[in-house]
Image (tube, rainbow, N blue to C red; front, side, top):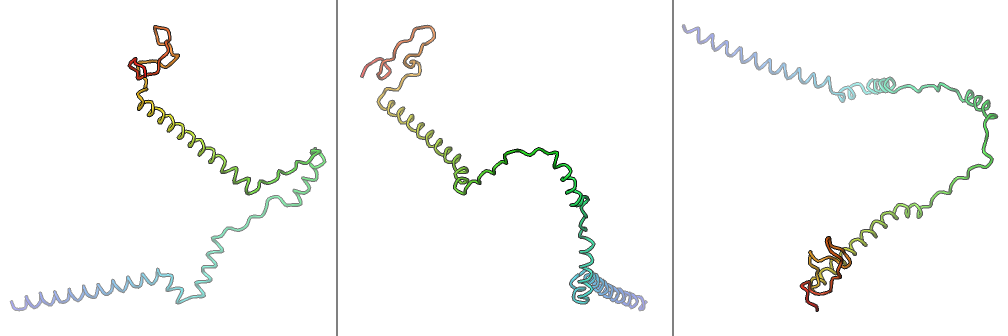
Length: 172
């Protein structure tokens, strides 16, 4: 019975050695695969072959120039044949003078300036109206909501002028 524990220990040692060797073998395979897939490795080992391979790949990847379907001489002949049939205008259209830099800038800035002026005028008018209403309210001259504006006809009756006052019928 003494041999059974020794055999078990031997088997365990052999399994540990096999695992260690397997781990080292896998590490070597990974290093080899990394070296095969690393282009820098090939550039260092075979510089001229790498340059030739890159040039060949570039040659085959870049499309070739296409030859024109119509040649210039054919176009010239076709234009010469059609030219006598064409009616040219008697006056040549003069090209419009190009706009100057300042004129172009004004063309761009004018709508912006007009919009700013419109916003300023609107803001000024609304502030002025609010100020007038505040002065009227401070003076006690604010019209009642049920009293009509001067010259406005209420339904069911003739128009009557509204007198200036506090709105309670008393005069100031």
